[in-house]
Image (cartoon, rainbow, N blue to C red; front, side):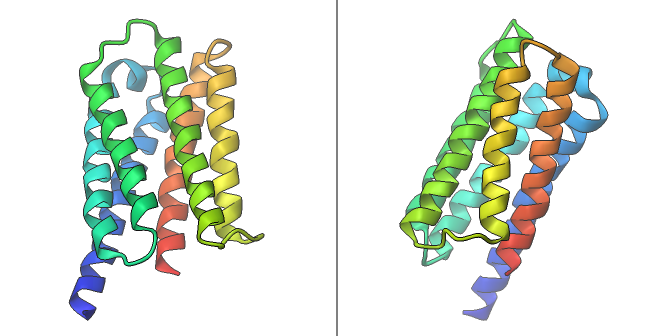
Amino acid sequence: MENIQNETYELFFLQYIFLGLVGILFFIFPITSINHFTKLSGSLIVISGIFKLINSFSVEKKIAINFILSALDILFGVSLIFIKINIIENLLIFYGIWSVIRSIILLFGEIIYRNLRLNFKTIYIVSLIIIGCLIINYSKINILLVSIIIGIYFIINAICGVFVNLK
C-alpha cells in the first residue's frame, strides 16, 4: 500500500512539473511561445493529463473529478496539437476557456466533497478562475500580457498543485 502511495506522489510531481514547464515557456518566451510552443505545450498537457488519469484510479476519493479533469486536459492538449488556429486571439481565448472550465470543475469538486472553506486550496482555485477570466478578457487587448498571464496560470497551478497534493 505504501508503494502505491509513493508512486501516486511521484505522478503528482511529474504532472505538476510538466505544467510548470509549460508556464515557464510562456513566461520566458511570451510571443514566440504562442507561435512555436503551442504543439509542445499541447504535448506536455496531454502527458500531464495521462498522469492525472493514471493517478485518478489510485486515489480512492475524487475519482470522478480527477477523471473529468484528466479527460479535459487530454482533449485540450490533443486539440492544441492537431487543430490549426490561425488567429492568435482565438488561441488565447481557447486557453482562457480551458482554464476557467478546469477551475470551475475543481471548485465543483470541492463543493461535492464538502471541502469548500476558506483555505489555501479554495483561494488557489478561485485565483485560477480569475486568471482564466483575465486571459479571456485581455486576449483582444494585449497579446504579450495575456501570454505572461497564461504562464503565470501554469506556474501557479504547478506550485499550488504540488503543495495541495502533499498536504
